[in-house]
Amino acid sequence: MDLVTAFIVLLVILLPILRGLFQRSRLPPSPSFGLPLIGHLHLLGRMPHQSLQALAKKHGSILFLRLGIIPAVVVSSVDLAKEVLKNQDLTFASRPYFLVGEDVGYHFMGMSLAGYGDHWKKLRRLYTLELFTAKRIDSFLSLRLEELSHMLSAVLYAHEKNQAVNMRNLLTCFTFNTITRILMNKRYFQHQGEELQGIDSSEASVFKAVLSEITEISLQFHISEFVPAYLRWMDLSVYHMRRLHADQDKFLQKIVDEHKYEKNKSSKDFMDLMLELFDGDPKGDNMIKAAMTYLQELVSAGTETSATTVEWTFGEILHRAPHVLTKAHEELDSVVGRSRLVDEADLPRLPYLQAIIKEAFRLHVPVPLLVPHMSMHEASLDGYHVPKGATTIVNAYAIGRDPALWDNPLEFRPERFLGSSMDVKGQDFELLPFGSGRRACPGMGLGLKTVQLALANLIHGFDWKASGQNALEEAAGAVIWLKTPLEAVGSPRLQVEVLTSCHI
Ligand code: HEM
Image (cartoon, rainbow, N blue to C red; front, side, top):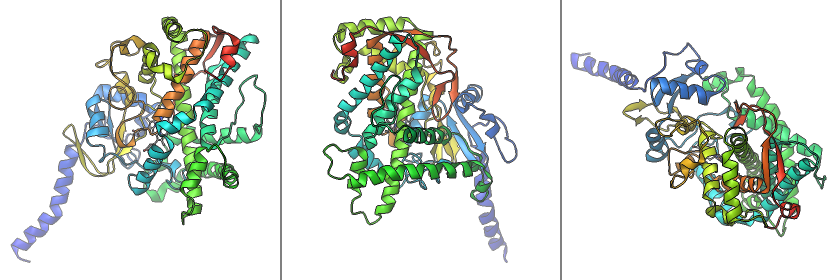
């Protein structure tokens, strides 16, 4: 080998090494070298959004972590969130590996955990152009109103019995029934005091138990997500997920079968629409499994997010900011009046109520780290190198509480939004409850309507007092709940006939 050939060979070997070293030197700041095997996993703690907020305060708004073998980048500023979710959103449009996507998610058939590609695009089109159009959401209005009247009647019932209302049970019952009726024309829960009507309570409790277990573990970190694929079997959660999947499968199959045999119905739910869309599809059976996945994912995505937002709002109003209730009552009395409930058409004329909802989403963003994204190729953020395949986390919680953006950020003060055009719909990166860009929440319209209608009418219909103490601490699951469920007593402000009628 002559000298020139030897030099070229050396160059070919050294160049990638030098490039790797150079890129490594340009990675975002890291809190430490990380531990062998687990890297920085131990720094996440039980409340990853809080731990990452604290790390950002110390090390800056972009961080590099190693989660097991997975490189991760965490951003906690408006500019960097905009870079990830808007300016470079195609680069960051994929998802990292989630254990729950395997069995429970029918091998990543659902949309929320699917990598970026044709399958995800097809689903996104289906969800945004067929299932979640404004017209379709409006067509389910009467059903939302019926559920609303069940919820208000339950508060009335508790008042008559001199009992406090468990707000979490009340709200999850409302959001769960609203979603399952839209999706599969089934009502699974009865409120306190409500008579059982066509509800198979054992079926309901199986469904709820399976779903809440799935929802709870779905966005938690699992060790198998951070080790090489051939070591995943070592994670005990894998076996837990398989058991859950078997229960879920039995249950969902029954719903699909019922729908297949009940064709030509006058009013169609989402399941009917999906089965119609895939009618004649050569992969018919697969599509049935897929429809089952969508049902599971939509119920999980749409119920707790809305319920926890309203529970936190009442928590703040009743325990920390009572003036908000008085001001909201004044606005509702002057715009809506006491002879009827609040209609969806009233909402644009209720700026204070809208401000309350924005403030709740700012201070208590239900999904604080959004759903983690993944870089599909190398990228540059703020001059730092982001490797291909890096889990990319936007800490919406830290942004919503950043003192550089918000005056007294821990104070619940809806007034900060009055006269401001800032909204929650993904255009303003200070406020990101639904994310933004390609992977933003497709159920935002429905989620917002559910939260607005429930909150507006619970406030309009009743005077509220907290029952007992509540320190308003957080508990982490797939969404951030209050650690202690909120108890409150509601006394009617409107006539009983108004509260119990579902016609607005
Ligand atoms: C207050 C209510 C809701 C909140 C706060 C919320 C929040 C979110 C967030 C933060 C994401 C992730 C965005 C990202 O990755 O950047 C998301 C995704 C998603 N949401 Fe929602 N959501 C709500 C209601 C709903 C409803 C009612 C549905 C449907 C019934 C729904 C279905 C989905 C789906 C399918 C995705 C995955 C999108 C994708 O990966 O492309 N959500 N949601």
